[in-house]
Image 1 (cartoon, rainbow, N blue to C red):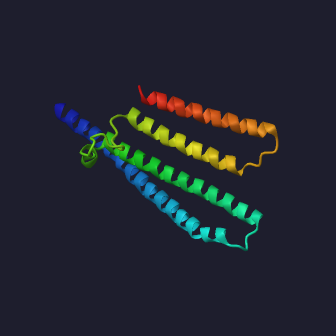
Image 2 (cartoon, one colour):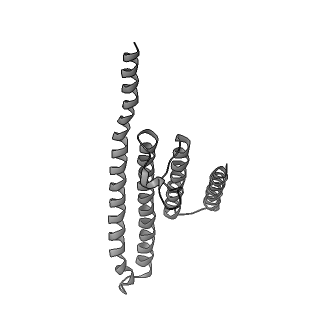
Image 3 (spheres, rainbow, N blue to C red):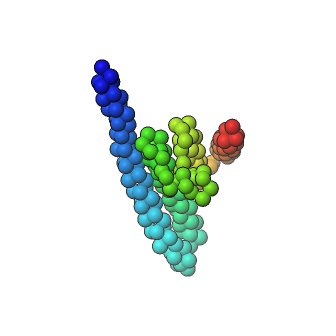
Length: 175
């Protein structure tokens, strides 16, 4: 019976290696998002020469500026999503497979990507998700055409809620 128990427990322990699938896919997805955001940034920057064109009238220049700001927000969103996937993949690896020695031996000993518990991983991911939501809010806020004073009031309320969420997130960091 002891032999069966040992084999079964070894099998149970080794089953954690299935997490490697999620780690690899998260890292590949992160690399893909970094690539996509970088290509978007390259093409956005390459089109900025049009902004200096004397042929553009004021309305066309304002439209190009608005489109460029929107593209910058989308690029930031892409990089944040890539960062989320990177933290998720490395966190799963550290929690279920093995500690990452170079991260543990980093200069300050407390690397950004060092994950010690599932709660630590959740807290780090929650902060990135909060930043993604803030960027999305900003993206929508610059696209909306404000027509009534209520629209401006709702925008202010949204900004106040973002401030509150950042305050609460920062407050929970101290505990």
